[in-house]
Each structure stands twice: as C-alpha cells, then as structure tokens.
Image 1: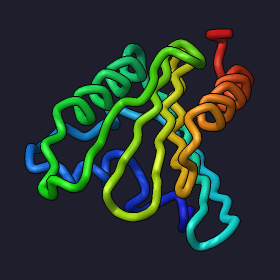
Image 2: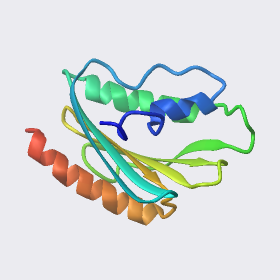
Image 3: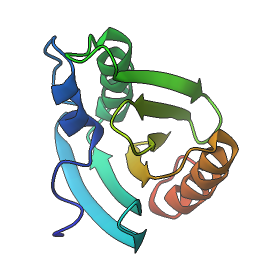
Length: 146
C-alpha cells in the first residue's frame, strides 16, 4: 500500500503539535487501504482497520484527545474537530489549516471497524459529511454492527 502508508494520517499530522499524543491505533487485527488522486493538490486516501473488542472506541477517543489537546508549534496552524456524530456509530470531521492546502480527515466507526479518510484539497464540510455517509454504508459489509 504505497500511498496508504506515509504521512497523510491523523497520527502523522500530530507532529504539528508541541505536546505528545498516544498513537491512535490500539491492537488492530487487520487493515486495508486505497488511494485516489485527481491532481497534485487533491487526493483521497482511505484506510480501514478492524480492532479487537472495544479498541475501535478507544481509537476514536484517542483521535478526539489528539485533536482537542493539540498545541501547534506554529501559531498559524490549527487542528480542530469541525463536526461529529454524523455517520456510523461514531464519526469525526477534523480540519487542519495553515499549510496552504485544505485538509480534512474523516474518522468513521461501525462496530469494530474504523475508517480513516484523508481529503486533501477538500474544503466543503457538507461534501465531507456526504463522503462519510458513504464510508459508513460500505463499512456495513464488513461488520455485524449494522
């Protein structure tokens, strides 16, 4: 998974924060990813992970803490939860600003599955929520939570 590995993830983005955060991933059992690029300034990268027991919920909690606790190195940059609770069992829409290209992350949980989607170049929260709904629908095929 060459494009699904790398520095696009919310975990990797935490390097813009002065304070340390625990890794999001807790005892993953499996993962699968896909990447789509329309232009150098636009990309969609998705990674779906299956977790043991309650670890999918722990991952979502850690994502919330990472974003809300972030104290950026650069005062021109920010990381914020723009919306939550709009898809699946749990969902977050996270926005990063200050590096020139809008970036959004979607985290959607259905049962023991968590999808993390990076939307590089996407600045429309309504479009991000629409994508999250589609992600949640696709996760139903992989879990008994639906």
